[in-house]
Image 1 (cartoon, one colour):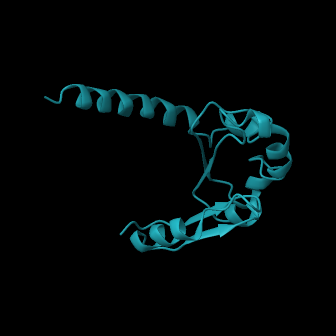
Image 2: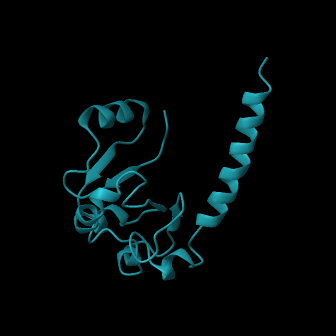
Length: 133
C-alpha cells in the first residue's frame, strides 16, 4: 500500500467521484480526504500540487471556472500554515490565476525540476515503446 496522506481541495462541484476516492483508499495506507477548503488542505502539507483551472478544450467555460476556483490560488497567504512546503505544477502555469509569481519563483517551488524530470521520463517511455518488436 502507498503510504502518503493526500488531501484534495476543489471547489464544490469539482470533487472526485465517490468511486474514485474509494478505489484510491483501497490501495493507500492513509485515507484520501476531499475538502472544499484550500486552507484546510495545506495545513502541515509537505507538497502542494496545483494545476491550471481552464484546460485546453474548456475555453468556453473559462469565466465560470475562474469564478468557481476563486479562493483556490496558491499564494503566500495560503501557504503560511505550511512554510516549508514544496510547490508543484505540471506546467504551463497561468501565473496570477492558479499560482502567483511569488510562489512559482520561490525557493519552495520545484515546478521546473518537475518539468525537467518529466522530460527524461517521457524520453525513456518513448524509447521503450519504440523499441518493442
